[in-house]
Image 1: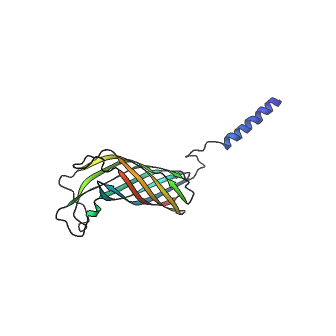
Image 2: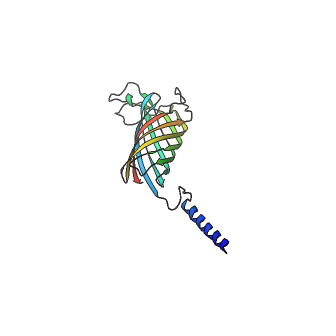
Image 3: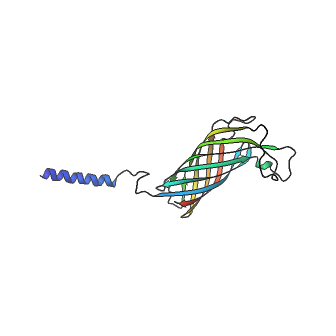
Length: 205
């Protein structure tokens, strides 16, 4: 009888220890679920020219530590070639966009200043376009428009600031890896490079 009682006590203690040390998972029911939507503005260089890159993203946040969602960005280079006077000959720029799955681990998300590590995996497109100066406010595609589709993966790191419970801002650096680009007189690695961005996020964190 004493042996049975000792076994029951040992089993009960083991169950308590297991519950106290149970593995916590990202999608467990007792963890928090948040979300955010946001946009970013940034600078990069494409084909040796200054370029503007902007975009948006939205994601669900699991347990303050992992965000999963979608992101998309657009870009155009040759900004320094725009002027108030129409050029005699049009200048050619590279313009396009890309987007896909967003995976964003977050370190110390409850702290006022912390880091996140977003990675975007997806597809994009790029084309040679003509610009004629700011007076036209649009792009004119050459008669023989050239464009290409590419695969992209863009890992980055963000220094985030919890400005308010519903608002975060971040300074970000990322690197854009792409498959080879096939455009006339354009290097196949033309879209690979660093991005510097300011991001603004709104939601339930």
